[in-house]
Length: 107
Image 1 (tube, rainbow, N blue to C red):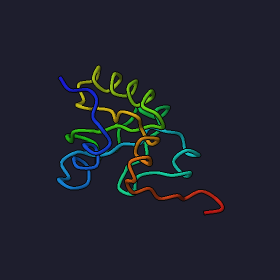
Image 2: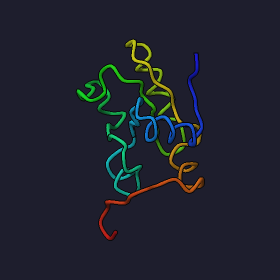
Image 3: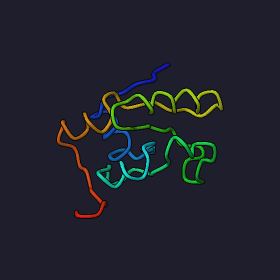
Image 4: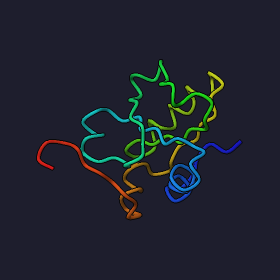
């Protein structure tokens, strides 16, 4: 079973065909520093409760570099939730020139 995808695959699955939901598992300060415009924010520390829009949809998880999103995939898989993580996380997302919005102070 597939567990990891590239940033380009993540953008395609979550934005263009809309079947999967991009879930950002970083903490609030990281989210504010820059996130994908169509992502849903749910920090790894709060992963115990999934929001309603998540239920029944394939999930693509992203964090800063890919470590926390891999852990989140493992947590969700143990609960029977289909999820993959983005190789290289937001570091690779920005490097690829994909869309990012910033919502922190001073932006």
